[in-house]
Image (cartoon, rainbow, N blue to C red; front, side):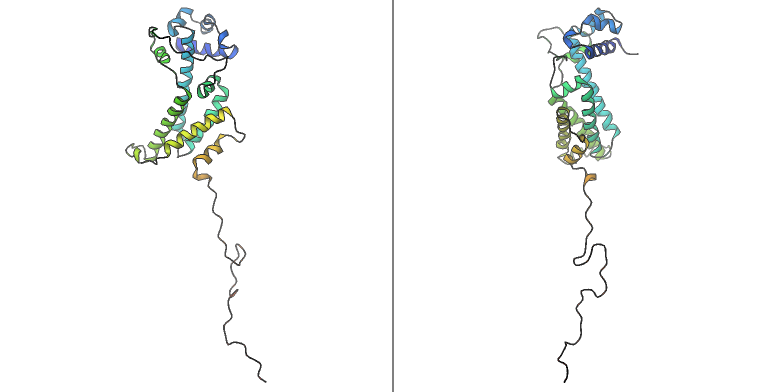
Length: 243
């Protein structure tokens, strides 16, 4: 059963799907959640606090999904491809996530404002975390990069963690490159999907072309050279016909 806080956040997100944030009323959010308006204010403090909590939950949900994919996929490339494809797909259907990843907050969305300087801290721990500050797109890139790097380093040394520093130095660059490519595809979608783009960019060994079979010069490919073909005949040199 969801907590009162989760019910209120769900109700606010549902209201946001129907109306721009400026049209979402606190009293309606409380009523939709089946709770009092006082409970709503006790949890979030204000409408700005509710906005910060909504975006914080969206960020946490996204990072949880990244961790899940890193735990499900194996290999040096497949986890990164999965994260990129999932990020693009989720951002397409979740406006709050898309705004969080790109920094493009439209008029319909609750662009969170920082807590007023000198304001007393919230009484609810979860709200104090939301009020402490929300990740910018560059922060999200760094968080996903670091999570991916740690997971791939553990996998490369069998989970011991003792040889993480010996992993190839370009791994962190590859992890960040994948996240940034995914975000570019959120803004400008690609027709063939993000997967092939990622595999090409990070040099997936599975996509390298197979070498062409060798052929023998002077013969048709695949056909063995006939015995004596091309050989120089030996024997006495031809002489003039005896008269």
